[in-house]
Length: 347
Image (cartoon, rainbow, N blue to C red; front, top):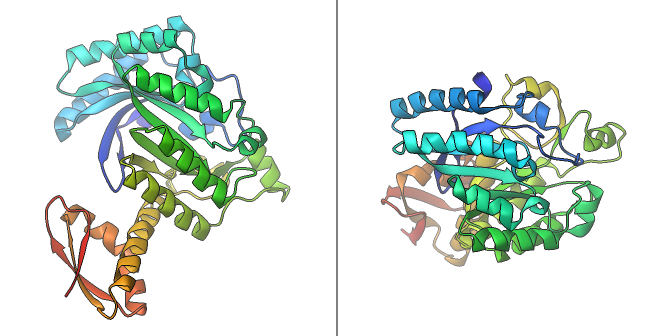
């Protein structure tokens, strides 16, 4: 079952491993403008207790070999819109693995829509060991929500987020940039509104245009285009900054679609790829460095103290940050200092 091989999410802050179980579009009564979960996950059949066991048995072997732990994650569909009986089948099976392999599996997370959260659902999730709930928000702009057939309001997001936190769950939020009717300012306003909800984690997804969706049809008729790559990099770098400065961990930035993926043939536009997150996070570091260095003029030579894990992010993809700063007349050397994000001093 190749589609269920271990998937590790990397951000500038953390590395999180999920034991991912995909339930594409199950439970969701809506078709949003951008959405075709069957094409996105390539897992079109529903899963039951046996499939969950097979998937988690495979993960258990992999996790032991690699010395990792994971949260069991139900992704793809609207998990809390599933029937209570089916949801209990999935959760009770996953919960068995929390008890069977407590050294490997550290709780359960699920993703869902803001309009399918209530107290009865959250009580069930908590009873079976769920400790994180992610809301697919996408936008907090009412016009953008309506144009993209989201069928929920920004106020429902606020109410659901509060309820999730009141029940003691880790709150995750997911937002998109470049949707129909979106602007960079609207995306930044969405980020600011999400920060007010005090989520623990966030995912930032620039729009990917898939053939056969509403956005795909509009794109092919020349009636829609999303943000350019440069706009996306600068925008997502700023959103990343705002989340990070408010202690919100960005656990995914961009949708990764490799050149070998079957889905590659279905994508007809938008911003995605294995390097997109790296480019955005690299721009975040570049903007920080440039601002600090400009304020330190006439000093043009710097020592940057940072954890070694951050060296590649500071240098940027293919050392683009170092190259661009040199064009501005600035040079720097990296000095390893454990557990330091980035600390800049004049030479």
